[in-house]
Amino acid sequence: MANFNLPSLPPSLLNNIISKIATTNIRDFGSARVAFPEFNAIGREDYFYKSANLIFLNDWTDEINDVRTFRLRYYNLGNPEAIYL
Image (cartoon, rainbow, N blue to C red; front, side, top):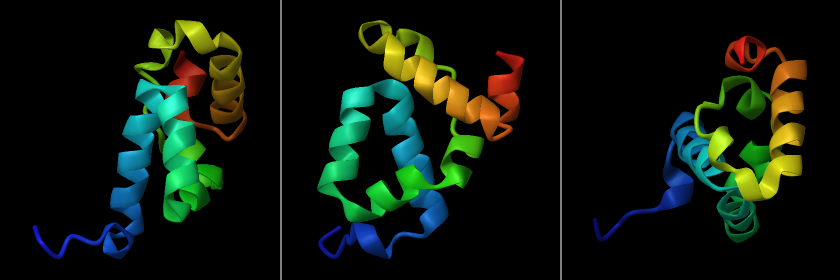
């Protein structure tokens, strides 16, 4: 893929990528948002918090306060998985 250009990807695909990063490691999520402006923009959108998969958030034992903040925002924005959890 010599001509791979991350900004040219559709927003829905970028949302899926940043969602996977966010649910795996909060520090990686922060780093991705700093390194790539499109991820930063998506990471601030309400849609991101409504649609992100929360299944791996339990693995964030070192960042428990960040997990609480994320879950609260997911819940407040009506993410059905957050409401279930």
